[in-house]
Image (cartoon, rainbow, N blue to C red; front, top):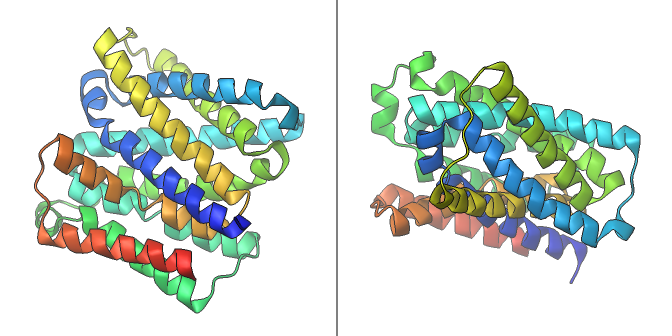
Length: 289
C-alpha cells in the first residue's frame, strides 16, 4: 500500500476515534465537569500510549529538544480541549460543533504556508465538500437565530478559541512527529495534557474525587478512542500531507452524529443526512484523487 493511501486510511481511523471519543464525552462532562473529564480521559490515553511506547521503544528516537517542543504543544492542546467542553456546557451543540471543527481551515492554511504542502484542484474541492458537510451535520439554523452571538453565555467565544487553537495544534504535531515518531509524540502530548489538566484542577482548587467504577469504565472507553484519534492522526501525517489527514480527521462530527442516533436515540434531520452524504462523498473523492 502506498504511503498516501496509508495516510488516507489513518485519517479515517482518526476520524472514527475522535468522533466516538467526543460523542461519549457528554455524560462525564456534565457530571464531573470539563476539567476532571480531561484529566481522567488523559490518564487512560497516556496509559494506553505508554504500553505502545514500551513495545516499540527500539523504534523511538529520544530528543530532549523535541520532547520539550511536544510538551509545549501539549500546553496549547489543553486549552482548546477545555474551551470546547466549556462551550458545550453553556452553548448549543448546533453552534459550537461546526465552529470548533472548522479549525481544519487553519490547519490546512498553515500547512500550505509553512510545510510547503500543495493540493490539486480536485483535492481542494473534495476538502471543501467535507468542510461543508462538517458544518451542516451539526449546524442548527434555529439555534443560530436564537443565540446571542459573541456573548459568553452563547459559548461562541469559547468555540472560536477552540477553532483557532485546534487549527494551530494539529498543524504543529508534524514538527515532533518528524523527529520523535508518531507513537512517542502522541504519548508526550497526551501525557502533557494530563499534567496540565491536573495542575489546572490544583490551582483552581476544584474538588478532586475519583469517579465511580461505572463512570471510570466509560471514561476508559473515551480515552481508548481518543488515543486512536491522536495516534492515527500522527501516523497519518508521518506518511501523507497534514492537509489531507486533517480534513479526514475533522470530519469526526459524522461519526458523532451517527453515534447519537444509535445510542442517544436522536433523530437525524434531512439536512444532517445530506451532510453525511457530502462528507462520505468528499472522503471517497479525496481517496480517489
